[in-house]
Length: 294
Image (cartoon, rainbow, N blue to C red; front, side, top):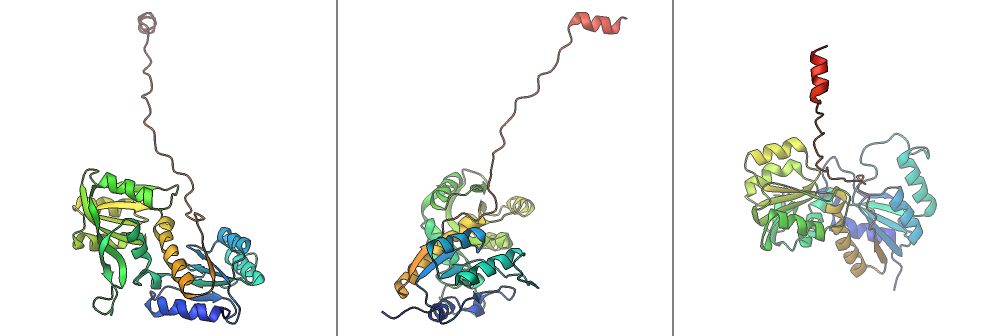
């Protein structure tokens, strides 16, 4: 079997997740690497951070396929004494290429939210926000709406979510009546509070995403919007890596490893415990009389 080159992998990734599908502010595609280099092992990660670079070097990966862009915001230097510069220098010295599929993978079908929906066994999937210009029926767009196999109370859906998604310190939070019955669910991998009103208009019973904030959630519930489930950003996008890995293995003669390193920045989550009221000091009658009658 012929060697697999970086160029062939990049061409295939760009065909599956076209760069034109990415948001205008996004930065996707090949970040670094020699097109003619031979790729035999790929590491799929959510974040290209020092820990996943360590992993790539430890397992002998030739290519990292990441979801989040390393160079999303412009930089004026990649000097080795800068955070991103250190990563880039390490990858170049080790001969490890880096490719990113971000919002172009979010809107793809199958894409990031399809993998998230599959963890909950949702069926009858359709986009929460159809992609602009997408052909009717092609299923592209941000987020997904589907139905649970059977209705669950919100508390039960929260438990199912905690069981099916990777474990993180942040865990799963739910907002709404715990006994509210849920059948139709919208999901969105990554930050999703910009689609709260879209989920409400869609008439779903619950909406699951990451990075929900206090005031938008409070106002959403006050307006009788769907119940909400908030999960760690990394956990919501990690399922997509399995899909990418399976496709790469089926398409190319390469070994593909999926990183389970939890790169969510939150590392500790402690629930507040109710505290007993401070004991009220009592004044003995004799002392009271002495104070009042010198």
